[in-house]
Image (cartoon, rainbow, N blue to C red; front, side, top):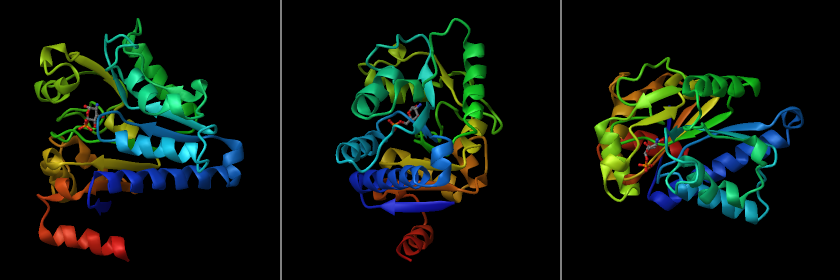
Length: 264
Ligand code: GLP
């Protein structure tokens, strides 16, 4: 696992956006770019907003185009209208898709209002497979180590499915729902841990003190269902981009090891 520790949120966001831009541009200028689009997995949450901001700026400056990019979002609440300001459809439009040239037909977000939710999840996995899998999955991390909406004790081989949100996650996400956890939907559709880990590359963002224990668990802890993000330890091309605030629980030796590698 590669760990990049940046001094603050802005640096972390810029580094990650530049990394994604390089990957898209490299793909598009290679023979593979003419044959198939670059397939990008995307998260919501407050952490990736800085990355999206940098991607939009880079698009406006002509440094990247999303015309040959296909996207798959990680998750969506069940039963929340698509045009609700806190739906992940609205979030993605607001922070990325309304500002770049990604064709609407290339954008995939789970429909939490589908008449048959199980069918919706099955079709989502099929759609990912139809593009030959995901090239790069960008993700966030919950304070309890959840990834997408794969709460603690989610199976490592889980696929896209319906999940009941834990009380902790509803409390954490209540800040977007007027501070009232009961207004946070009880269920969500989410890609599974295996869906994310099948991606050719996984990049996880982690920022702030509230994520320090989760970061310690994924980097220094054991592989365990208690910390779903620990699955990243099994990925051949897994990378965490974090900031100093979230790195406070790491051992001094671990911190120095990754900082030293970064400077090589
Ligand atoms: C939600 C999302 C996750 C995200 C997490 C952390 O639960 N489903 O994909 O990683 O929030 O969000 P934040 O970045 O706001 O801390």
